[in-house]
Length: 477
Image 1 (cartoon, rainbow, N blue to C red):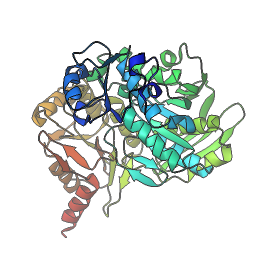
Image 2: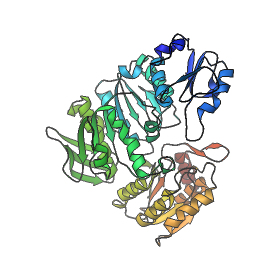
Image 3: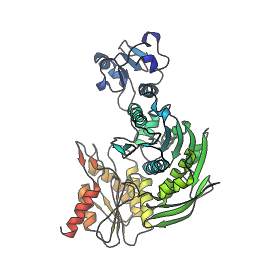
Image 4: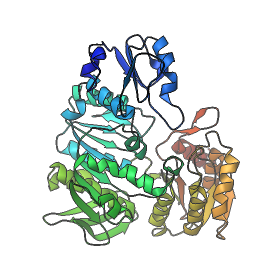
């Protein structure tokens, strides 16, 4: 493809340069490639321009001059990468109706709910998210919430070629800040909530909020959780159609007659014209908000209310989100992805209303990530639960014991009994072997993940399997 067909305002001497591939990774450069110099949080792609030229790059897309002699200077290489990726794959996003979901918690649940609704309406749906990417029923593994702009457009291309008419995707703050979804139009965008996370990257909550807000400059309709503390700042100045959802105050759509049960929650979603009776198989207040967001987004996507009700009420729940792991004993085991202060608080609030015995939480915090949330999570867990098992999550390059020490600073602000078991498998085994009648055990942090990231390797760790083995041991099998 000619460079002028990939990028606007190309200098005349480069317009007809034939490009055989594009990449922002100098290690992937081959003969005839366009290499794009991305300035990242750790590395500056401009420093690898000469290496890219030596490997055969036909042109270097840069924000400043390099010594390559084949520079095309652009104002923003992140934006250029997004535009070139879209053009390379024939702008497939323009052939799909898109819904984007952003927020600290709830993105995955809302994404799967929407996929079910759109499929019930007869659409073939693509999904891009934390657990996996999907094209209809086909599953494609994913390594991060929002892929790079090249990978994203490649996915869109495959979706279109395989007959997808719409796609639902989680949109992370990193992706928005790094312009991975630059120049993509969304039919509907959803804001679920904003609580402390990723401050290792964004530094402040204001920066984090501003990154999330960028999604709503790219959509026709915005669905905003009006009960979130950041809702007004997210909504301020938006030029798209804005609707709000709420369980507490006046809003465009409100949850009424909420009934929480051990096996789920029921409520009526009331709007100006609609009243949707909804019964979900996952419990808790967060389920109410997730369901409202999905339902309202679907309505503004053009789906009728009967289809929305049928799809949502027929759902079996989502792996790793308040997932009940069946066992033969008289205690309950829950696996949940809660890995933020708000996530821990929500899951514990949900099951504290239902408990007859102790509410036990097993959790840790990720290494090489926001350290400031560790004592906060410890304090919330100690305040809300009856017993704590503090363990490892994904320690990465940090010492697990050091991460645990940070958590314990918050735990020790309360008198709640706790134990520390660094090895997560042993910690789960301890929880199962010591559970009492009517206890509720929440295994928090891993959710859908079936691995654990250590300093030198990634190991298999599926908590369902660990629970099953511990149950068998307790049975004496």
